[in-house]
Length: 229
Image 1 (cartoon, rainbow, N blue to C red):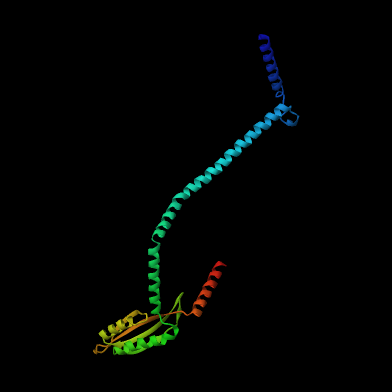
Image 2: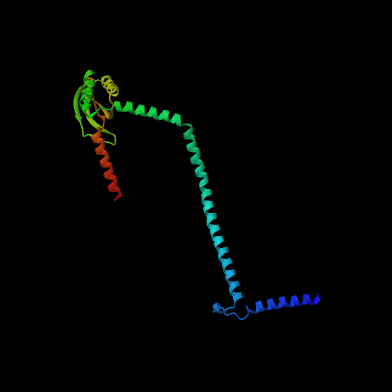
């Protein structure tokens, strides 16, 4: 029994010694000439190193992506809460939208069309004459086209008594169509008759017809195209 155990130890020692001898005197510049065992061990070490390095690189990338997604979480939660609030109040928001559209429609009805402008100018003139005022100037200016409407300034100068001038301004404000008075100025006459002169710019507005809206849209598209260049 002792002889058998001694024989096994000798065999193992010889195996280890033979294996160790293959690693002695290796030329690093010529690995192709190494014995089989050093080649196998070297390939195993390199394979494990590549796997470990690749694993850590992959893990680092995944960690960065996870951190980036975590940073997005507060903004996504806030967006979710906002949209949830809109969804809860959807019926109320639709009701408000309907009310706004109705209000806009009412305002549009107060804007005359191109064919009604002459009648509106006549209404302004009639309002002044109805208060006993004397028109010294009533000159429509150049039409200014906006995005959805056109604006017509009218330079006016009327003379009359103070209360009549005030009543005229009120009559203009109460016309069925929108008319606003700007740059108002009142001066007194040199005599003692109590007659005052009022200068102002009356601005009235009308909606654009389909052809004018199309022209405005084309002009806007051309301006945007020019800005991009």
